Length: 201
Image (tube, rainbow, N blue to C red):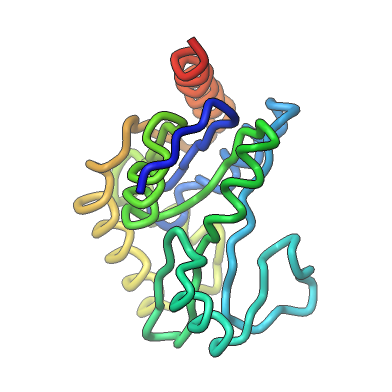
């Protein structure tokens, strides 16, 4: 059921593997004093350098499934290959919106649809794309020089799927040209500023 609120704002940013959407998000958060990154909940084990409630909210698989049944998640997904859940809690959105925060969130089309359905008046979404498949291949191999051919092909195939099947659901698309990160950030900033003004007018 849609929630009406005149506080806060949600900015959803996504893009295919290796395009740099997380880097763009981090740069945008620095530009807004009242912004924050929404912390995702996961059932995967915590890594050595990760902090609970900072990098992720860590739950056991059983606890995650219990909270799904209780309806605590606005959206969630299960990655079958890794037997891991990821999701975002409705209570996290409402708490941050009530604090009048600009919430930045990286998610797929499924998560985007859930947010738009629940908070229809307080969001905008941006899909960060690469110039072409060849450009993405260069990015992936530059980021991980030791990547194997099989893994590279998997990531390339999934990136192509995201562009073909998910890009259309987002409000805006920005090409993140290699070496032009600041230009991408400025374009996204202008889109967000315009959306904020419209939401608050």
